[in-house]
Length: 255
Image 1 (cartoon, rainbow, N blue to C red):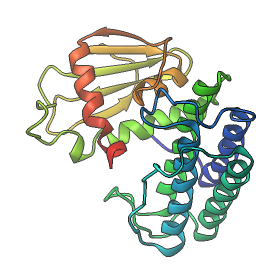
Image 2 (image 1 turned 180 degrees about the vertical axis):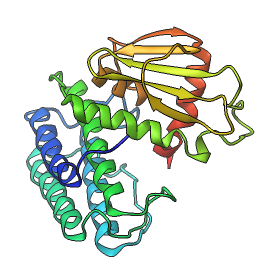
Image 3 (image 1 turned 90 degrees about the horizontal axis):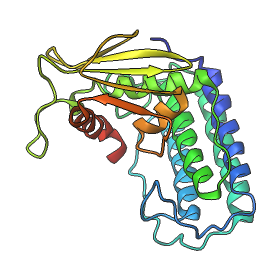
């Protein structure tokens, strides 16, 4: 249950942004993004670049200010501006992360992870998932190294154990119960079990029988967790439990 090296995340923020800009070369910036309803491609790219710049300020200053996410003014973007703007933002974030170092104390939304390494990992996969969104719009092929996909799946599983993911809510049924487990089987990269039978959720690597099983290539499993199209994924068992777990574990995407 170890993450990748800090420098790898810093590299990937830049590399994934470069691959993102390759997906959008010559694309229509006003094209709708089906996986992000209400956004067009230009707004998606503004979101990515805005996230990079906001995270860079958090890392550089150690604190957080509210991130202005109103994208209504960016409906007719220009690729010739966005490409270098995205590159500049990713490079600035990577540079600030390296300057701070992995153990620098900074604000994060995770109470138990208050170091710059949190943002290196989070921004690497924020960029990855939105690169998949852009590839979907432009009809280009999305691929991801298996080690990155595995680590991104495990990042999601780590978030799934946070109190916000299972504490009682008036608008959602309870998540924990004695007969509730979820198995995720990557056909090319391993497996994980999510155990909801205790006082709080837990997860561990390995292949187990479970109440509901999700199976597919690891990159598709990652996209499935993020509610992106993942046609190679197959589900067997209690789909209602899976839907509830996905709704609860996605709380941090709504922040």
